Image 1 (cartoon, helix red, strand yellow):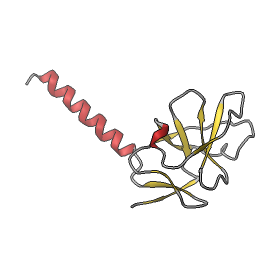
Image 2 (tube, helix red, strand yellow):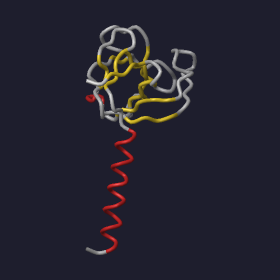
Image 3 (spheres, rainbow, N blue to C red):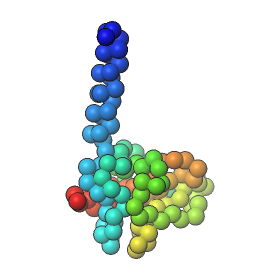
Image 4 (cartoon, helix red, strand yellow):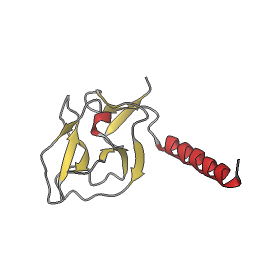
Length: 122
C-alpha cells in the first residue's frame, strides 16, 4: 500500500470520527409535550446567531442541531414562509406550542434550537 493511500485512509477515519463526535448521542424531545422530535445520530451541532426580525423567541439561541433531511425528523411541523429571508419556523407537530427551530425555504438544512428541546437516551 502506497504512503498516499494510507494518508487518505487516515484522513477518512479522522473525518468519520469528527463527524460522529458532533452527532446527537441521545434522542431529541419536545420540552412541552415530551414527544420525540428526532432520534439519536441524525443531527449535528453548530453554533450561530440568527435574527428573526422579532417573529419568534429564537433570537437568543446560539447552539443548533442541524438535520440535513426533513425525513430524519420523527415529529415536526412547518409554518408558511414567515419573513423576508424565506424562513419557515419548526414546531413539534403534536403540541405546536412554540417555535423550536427554523429552515430557509428551498435549502436542505433544518435547525433545532438546543435550548428549546430536551434529551433522553432510549
